[in-house]
Length: 463
View (tube, rainbow, N blue to C red):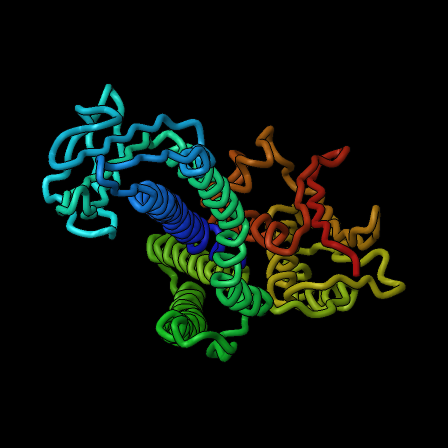
C-alpha cells in the first residue's frame, strides 16, 4: 500500500513540487544575476565618475590667471589617474570666454553649463564611442577682469564595461551554483514534505486484512482531511463486510432449511404414493430440490471463500485433525453408498498456516466429489504427506475419472465433466478448491489414477 500511495499520490505531486521549487530557484538565480549586473554597472559608473570628476577638477584648479592670459599646465599625473581604470580613450576641452583654447573643440558641451567646481556629468556619443564627460566651471581674473573658464574631460566606457562584465560573470556563476544547489535541496524538501504520507502509508500497510480500526497515526494537520476521509471509508467498509458476512450466514440458513423440508416431505410422499406417475414426478421433484440445495450451498460456500480470501484469518491448522473431522462428517454418506472411506498418513500432525474455514471447505468439496462420483463397493482414500516444504492432502477415488477434460476446464465456474450428467452437481466444487489454494499460496491439481479414478492433490505451505 505504501508504494501505491507513494506512486499514485506522491509521484505526480513530488515531481510538480520539485519543478515548482526549481522554477523559483531559476527565477531567483536570474534575478540575482540582473541585480548584481545592475549594481555592478552603477558601482563602476559611480567609481569612474568620481575619478573623472576629480581629474577634471584637478585640471581646473591648476589653471592660473596672469596679466597676459591663462596659463594651462596639464599634469601627466592627472591623465594617468584616468588611465588606471582601463584601456579607455581620453578627450578634453578647455574653453575660455566661450572659445576653445586647447583640446577637442567639437567635444560636446553640457545642456546645462556648470557654475562651480562641482563636476556635472553627462553621456554623449562621440567619434563612434559612448563618452562619459565631466564638466567643471570656474572664473579667473585675467588683466583685472573676470573670465569664465569651462573644463571638459571625456572618457570612453570600455573599462567600466569590463569591470561590470567581470562582476556579472561572477554573478552568473553564483546564480548557476545556487541553481545547482537548489536541485538536491528541492528533492530533499519534497521528500521531507511527503515523508508523513509515506509513514502513514506504512502504518496502514502493516495492518492485517481484518484490522479495520480507525487510523490514529500522528500526522501533520494538513493530512487531517485525508485521515478523516480514510477513517470514514474504513468505517463504511467495516459495516459493509459485517453485513456481507451476516447475509451469507443467514442466506445459507434460510435457503437450506426450506429445501430440506421440501425434500423430506417429497420423500415421505414418495414412500406413501402408489401411483407410478406420481412417484415419477416426486422423484423429479426430489432431484430438482437436491440440485437446488447443492447449487445454493456451493454458491454460498463460493461467496464465503471469495469473502474470506480478502479477509484471511491466519492460524495454525493441523491437516490431520481437519481430515479426520471431514472423514467423520462424510462417514454416514459413504456408508449409504457402500463406500470405504480411509485415512492414510495420519500418524503425526501435519501443520500449515492459513484460514481453517477455507481449508475445511476445500477438503469437504474434494471428499464430496470423490464420494459422489465413486461406484458402490469402491474405496476413497484421504492421504496426508509432505514434500518439498509443502503439506499435501490427496483424495483418491475409483470413480469415473476425468474423461479427457483438462484441469482449467474442470476448475472453471459451473463447468462439469462430460461423464457426470446423471449426477447432481453445481460445477463449483473444484472452483472453490482452486481459489482456496491460490488464496493460501498453495496449489491444486487433478490427475487420473491407473485403473480408473482420480487423484485430487491439494498442496499448502508447511508451517
